Image (cartoon, rainbow, N blue to C red):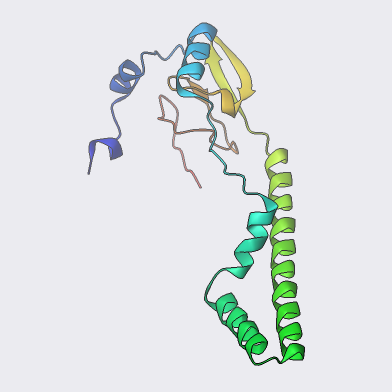
Length: 161
């Protein structure tokens, strides 16, 4: 087991994060937010045109494209037309399905505007989970979505799905 996989004692964690069980001040949290950035995963945006072109890349599209090229070489224009239309139709259907799925996923993400209860300036506050910083003391209750990596300071039995 490596050092990063071990659970540190609470005192060592608090000391390492320069915090206490009383939480952070708003000023400390702002400084840490600037230092570490938002508590979010980076998402790479790919242009729709590039996504569409990906449907022409791979072993199966290459075989279909080779068949189209061979049809052009032997001047079977009807076969070339049919193969090209099927290749475009397949890419269009795949692109449309991916677009609908990513739109549905974005809608779900927006509905899950994750919030967290943190101890700042000695008071419990509800903030966006993206504004959490290392050293924040977070309150977790039954049914909550855990907004970041946490270590349990106090409480009873905890079961996480």
